[in-house]
Structure formats: structure tokens, C-alpha cells
Image (cartoon, rainbow, N blue to C red):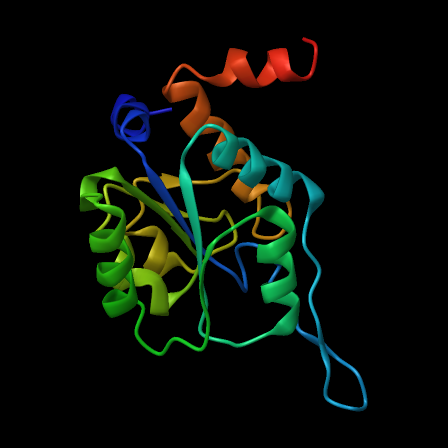
Length: 175
């Protein structure tokens, strides 16, 4: 792993996550009544909880609106949820200002073209392994794992290890 990735991860105070293609594999299952079903990976959720326990803020940013995403955010304790976004930059600026964090203290994980404006702004831009090539060009780090299959957990561990907090996490599990 590049030294610059570790150095930037040390300063992360806020993790922003796209949803479709990052927290999920990008699939949208719809039943005959038009209800959406999304599938989330349990290890990604555990990684988010670890970050929150370590005092790192987490936010979900998504272009779609879904009750499943609202439920997932509530289940994990994610207080910052932005849905139905056509432009992610304005709500990002509002959240960043409200939390008092600088661009360099933000990690954003995206996967597609719509995510490039945020990837260009944040201190630690990350794209999932199966993200589009154009987005990967703006990433400082590309995950080994694909979206919806542990990529978020991979980044959560990276941040915690870079900040010297991984041993603390392991102790919570008796290790």
C-alpha cells in the first residue's frame, strides 16, 4: 500500500459512503408492487460500527431514496443520511461545515461517474474494486474487494490501522 494512503487515512474524521455500488453490489431488486430490496454485507456494517465507536463520523450519500437505506443507517447508528441527491457536493459542504472538518480529513468511497466531484475534493478518495475506470482515475486507493462485498470494511480497517486504533478494536473482541 502506498505510504500516502496511510498518511491521509491517519487524519480521517469523516467517512462518506455512496450506497448503490459501494454499500451494495449495485443490484436493485424490485417486486411486482415496485418495492425495492437491497442487500448489505454484514462485515461492511461491522466496519462502520467500529469507526463510529472510534469517534469517526460516517455519512451515507445516495442519488436514490430508499426505505431500506434509511433502515440500514438507523440499524448501524449512522446519523448523517442524504438521499435523493442529484448533486452530492452541496450537501457535502453543508455536512463538512456543520461537523467542522476539512476536506483533507474526509474519506469518500464511490464507484461511478456521479462520484467524481467528491472524489476530487476529499483528502482520501477511494473507489471500490469494481467501480468504473473513470472514477478509479481519481482514487488514491482502489479496494481489493468489490462494492457490497466487503470494500467498506476494507477501508474501515485501513483507517483504524493507520490511526493506531486496530489493537483497541481487537481487544473489544477479546483478542
